[in-house]
Every structure is written in C-alpha cells, then in structure tokens.
Amino acid sequence: MRLTTKGRYAVTAMLDLAIHTDSGPISLADISQRQGISLSYLEQLFAKLRRGELVNSVRGPGGGYLLSRSGAEIFVAQIVDAVNETVDATGCGGDGDCQQGEKCLTHHLWCDLSDQIHSFLSSISLASLVDRHEVQEVSARQDRDKAESAIPVATVL
Image (cartoon, rainbow, N blue to C red; front, top):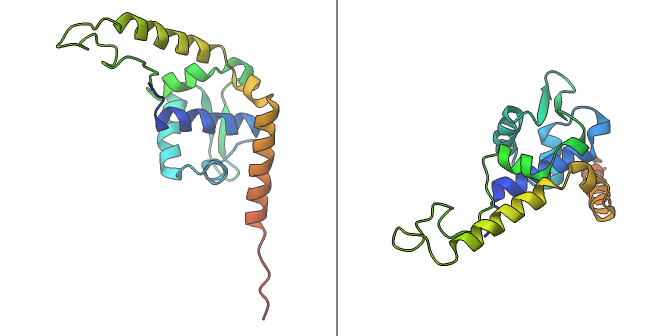
C-alpha cells in the first residue's frame, strides 16, 4: 500500500499554498522552487485541483493560485481524490480478483484498511497541518532557502 507521487505532490503543493495564503496569489513557480516539484507537473496537478474546486486561479501580473475556501474546510482526502488518486491497501486495486479472478482470503481486511486510511485523511484539514509546529519549522527553512537563492551574489573582479 502506498500513496503515489501524484497524491503526495498534490498534498504538498496544497499545504504550501495554505501556508502562504496571506501573501495573495501564489505562483506555481514559487511552489516548484520551495518544494522541488517540476513546474509542468504542478500545472497538471493544479488543473485537476481547479476542476475539483479546491483552488482558484488568478490571471495576470501577480497572478497565481488561491485556496477556494479556508484551509479549515479543505481536507487531505479531498486533495487526494481531486487528483484521481486512491489509497488502496489491496493487492487487486479493490477489484476483488486477487486470487485467480476471485477474492482472496484477506480481501475484506485490506478494503477495510483502505477505508480507514481514507477516513483518517478526511479528518485532517490543511489548517490543522499549517498549525503544526514541525510544519512551520520546515516552511520557515524553505522560505529562508528561497530568499537566499534569490539574492544575487556580487562578483569580485
């Protein structure tokens, strides 16, 4: 069982957006730089997040993305679902054809686990993640790193 890169990156990008929400629209280039996610991949994810009504886009200079509602109203499971991702603990993808086309002995156990994981992710809002001390520490470090990389280095002749 695992959450694929698509789901992980979508949650990471949305958390970055939630952390920086007071700064106005956030560009995908900024998220890309802070999180180390390719810009083209973020564009694909944000198209799905926009269709899932989790973000709004702002065009023009100073444009970017905003959360469509408060971080307290957006849950991790909604983000995972919006990018067509599933957290599935079964070996058959939930199809029930685990053992020569039939359900295996533990099929229902793994289905129940998948349901529990989805339920758990449904209880975690972006706001609750933003409030976590360790998330704030990582975000502060990323912001420092981004600021330092933007400072031009004087050349010595």
